[in-house]
Length: 432
Ligand code: UDX
Image 1 (cartoon, rainbow, N blue to C red):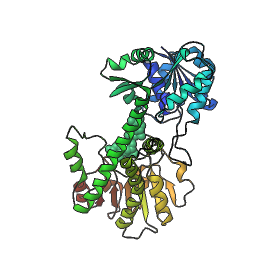
Image 2: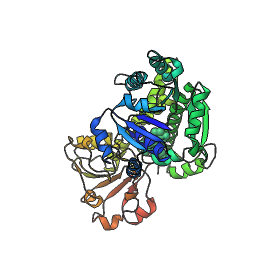
Image 3: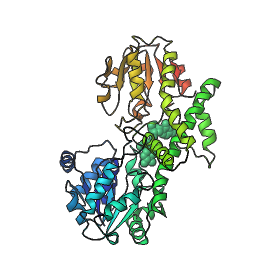
Image 4: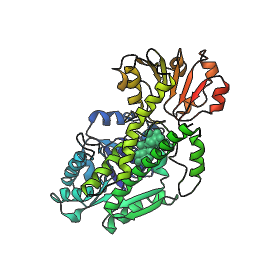
């Protein structure tokens, strides 16, 4: 099929490349000329394992094209995916839909034959209805169908999540577009993906409800971890003990430094904002947002306790600063609160991250990037394992540092406390 992806961020580029790998002709459109020119040279703007080789392969076999010309790309395609950003609005918790609606208007002026126009961006319930109205101002409804087809791609695992989704959700109010979408996704359905045809508003809500529930699950285990720290229990035992109950499930039950990223924080706020508009109180999600926002304060107090209230002039190493492993994404990472806190208290911070130094810390005094784990640990009083990169999972602390008094704060519980203590180091974890 002939597809057009509008927006070449995580969603648009990953989905576009994967659709082309399934044999479709795909044009990825972006108004950022520099980005498009780089993509044509095989320079990928995002860190996503495996993406570069897929882009090169499909660009070479001409199934994947890049363009800045939205009008021409829409005219050549049958299915148009809107994959632009829907960030949180500056002065409220609602999703900023200006880009979605602007693209919808541009598409409406380029419709030369029947098109399926798909919202793949995460959008609040009723966005599809508004988009339909915007497009029908310029084009009769018989020439298009607006569909919601949310993505469930996790950063760092996006390609696998695309090719092996638990489910494909397609929200449409007409059977013709349902039939066409089912055929587009047939290669994934034949490999076991569940195809969930529903109406447009339901599909929009499924996306938000999924992310809000996952954020709730993570926050739940983070709060249980707080209780574990007070009662001498290891939260990892709780995660296993409850996760084996099939009604609960063991995924997204890893206690950590707070959820971050470009989705959970944005989507939890957006679903609450939508509910408020419909005079519905989502009290659980509101408390999840509050609990997660307060978590960095809790961890800062714990760091202060670990350093016996003497942070000034202490050398603190951060291993990993991104919001999770296998991404270079810093959005809403808890390190963006923890490092400034320590810097303000007069600590000397050295951080190492496999994806390199971060502009977010450039202006902070006494914060410097280290080019290796060893360099980051040199003369350190405390090492904080902030992100669960594989690179950190087999560090031989005995060999890598001479400082016998090094304290290890394992914010992802990737080490065995017993093993670390046996090496003679002081160990702190999360919920243990
Ligand atoms: C999320 C959803 O998982 C994905 O389906 C959606 O399409 C986009 O948003 P992503 O934001 O990439 O994906 O990250 P995810 O892997 O979900 O983790 C979100 C946050 O929760 C991260 O900060 C992560 O560290 C944290 N997390 C996740 C935990 O603290 N514990 C866990 O067990 C799992």
